[in-house]
Length: 471
Image 1 (cartoon, one colour):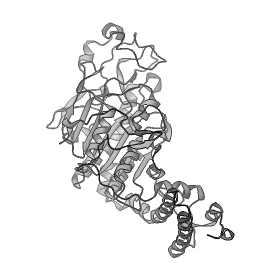
Image 2: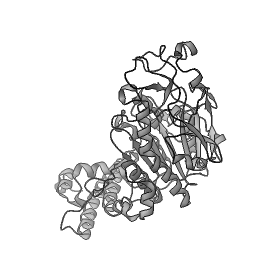
Image 3: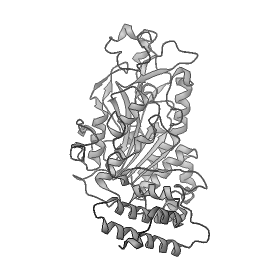
Image 4: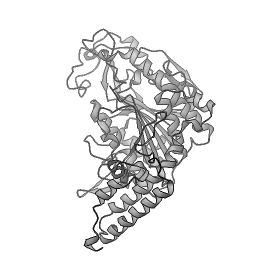
């Protein structure tokens, strides 16, 4: 290219009106460049993932882990029952020795043919337990919110590593060139921040696209074309810009990010049509919309189904982010009101998602994950104020999954009779990550990225596939 023809790309981009995209937003979208589908390491059981993350630490003892023995020991001090070592590793700012054993605050009943125990606060979810695989012996490495969130999402305690969704798109690519492979919908910023769904050291195209689901608004910023600009004119501007990009790329072949930028501009153009269609919930029948309900969480669940149906590889719904709504301390509204209101907000949407996917024949190939950073202690907080609360607890808690090649109507693992320690088939977060990748056809030990002279992976140097829960 003749130097006299040199063009300042940033200045040129700023003058373009392609799709009404602001310059910064357009450059951000280069991270969402087209990803071709890639084969996994073995035959997959699932094609897509919908992950629902409850921010704040949902209590296993008030949701899915029935511990009637707690009533027998109610009022006893933690130090009278548990050893000094047992009581180490919780929130470093608080002591727990004088905390009193607290029985479950809600009633439990068995449901379905599998006889799963479910709390009264989940009446709708109780009707679909035969589709669910409960993991009741989960444990993790920290009882601090931010660290727990980072471990769950990235497999590491320090920020800066790729999220699970990024690893999945890195391993499998995408089925669609006009939609992001990894989409996040959230109701606020979580304790660990947006770091939890970043791509880390992976190429930028593997970061999540954050979408909003609000009536009358575009799911992604700046997708509305400028008034008077036809689709043909936009296409012409894109073609001109990409010709310049390709000339520059061919001159500097060692800069692969130039290809990503070209792909991103093309995706931004295509998103004007594809995003509007996928995120338009009015395209669903009235009966389907009523099945899910109409709060934000329910709309996120319905949109998640539409996204995976359209070929999006990994969808995450982050619930209760603002204010850590599942954080059931006595000074944060109290355990009873906290969990009753949170479950009421989410019960219909998540139950409808399972029912809807099954009715469409999609549950077999879609893996649903319900997760939280940790559980809650079997004992009440010491020196509580006016309301009952439980502390942070990472040594034994419950997560669940559904669909995606799992054995259904199953409870795997267990905590002890007081819900303190994972004692039967304990599953670390690394083991769950390894299992999720396995269901998607990926070997967690082979899915690596070379960085700073080491092979980085989601499971670090740990993790075993939980073959017992795979159908």
